[in-house]
Length: 139
Image (cartoon, rainbow, N blue to C red; front, side, top):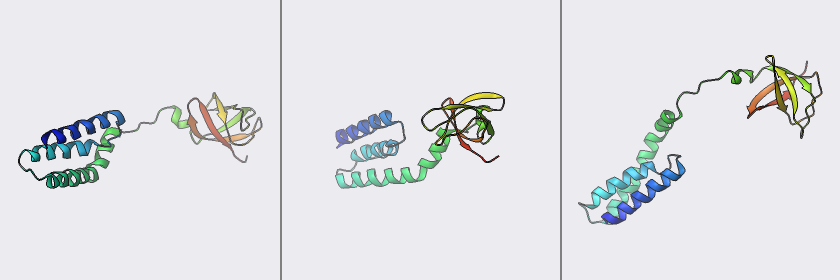
């Protein structure tokens, strides 16, 4: 049984390395425990039960905390502050053709789901790469 558990642990490690989304790391740990347990207990069903139950317990109790640690603290940049600001359209924006807006003294390429004419006021919804997603606001 030791070789089977070793194979399971190696396979789960490979899956974790390929996904990098903390999918199987808890079952790697429970697989190691099951591998050690297989040195002392011959009953496969006990080893498998320990593997499954311990993996689920580890997953449920530590995943959120570990994700918070890995995510870190998000720090806004200077670009993020234009989100929510009002801009003025300097080149017409249509659904399929980006236009241009001026916000915070800078010109940006802008996209929208509707046609917006030059001189209209728009609200910046989000930054999508180097473009602003905007929507027209009433003056």
